[in-house]
Length: 295
Image 1 (cartoon, rainbow, N blue to C red):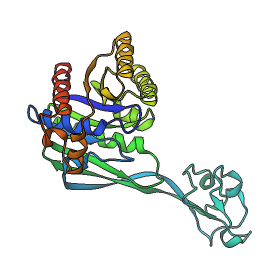
Image 2 (image 1 turned 45 degrees about the horizontal axis):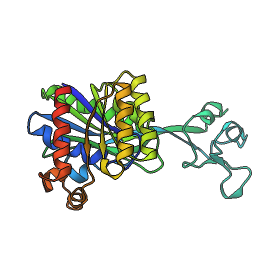
Image 3 (image 1 turned 180 degrees about the horizontal axis):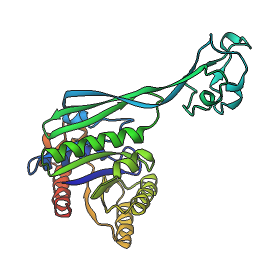
């Protein structure tokens, strides 16, 4: 079993579109399991049209609450709360309650309350799903607004995907990773055999490409790059290729700007499904052939 994670230093580079195309190509040659690890803005399902099979709750951090009857109004909870989450409801200086939006779940008030009037319970921070797509089983999730621990949710998704892949003797776990370099990205990269970074020839994209490459080097994960919309700024594309060449990072291909990609997305399809002979489709096919050699 191999793990391929598709990443981007920034959002909007076409990472998910490329992942969906790779899923379609890979599924014709091997059995695979997919995981959409971009849990804060998951959208791989928009191109794969999966049918949900199972739904699970994800519990995140803690939220504190105060028992008004047990509270002795000592004010210790307000003193130790660093986030301003303990408030006076209705302006009553002798009453205390916790604003759940401001509460960060540190439990300082819970431990400091002299009469044990404060409880701290784990909250349901999102849901995750196992669905069936035409490319294979898909694990994806929905993180609720304002919730945290998305890195933990990504880890749960990947663990479930790897477990299913191992039990069914699948050849590949394909992960659509989140953008950036934060905790969810690190969780998505864990255990990966290869990372494919989808970038584009723009100033911010090139800057963030270097950041994600540094992150992958730090964790010892082999990297490769493809350049999407490569013809909108040829000099920047050549700059990316030269930089990667100097770093010993393979550039697997260029994907030209192709309006058929947008047409396909409007119909809930990948460009390979919509027009397999289009320039973008042929470019992605070439990238997959090189990826297959690496894997």
